[in-house]
Length: 118
Image (cartoon, rainbow, N blue to C red; front, side, top):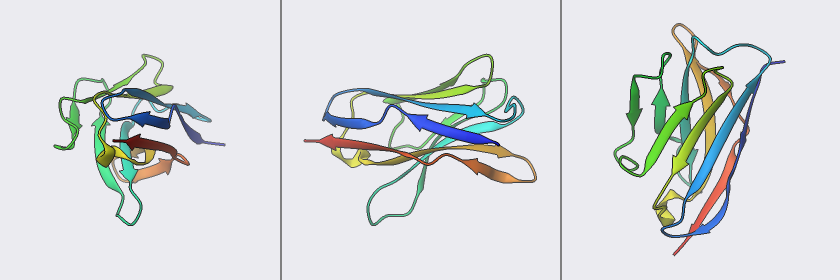
């Protein structure tokens, strides 16, 4: 069974840091791009960051550039999102997802809650 499982969420104060992890199982994702998305209450899910196969091609949403860093391990099992200088507007459920040409974002995790208090 293919699964993506997020972890590392929590409740923090503005200015704090969190590191989210997305662990893949059930198949190899070496040829997939891995993305992070988030959904705040009452809002649509939005793109946060993506890291493409090979690790050299990375993009971020403007709202997180300079604060968030996406990475993945060499075994292509874990994708991380280091979040620094968190702001209350970063409060959301964060999801990881695996993307491939032709299927798009086919695999999604269940999400992990991040709450940032001012």
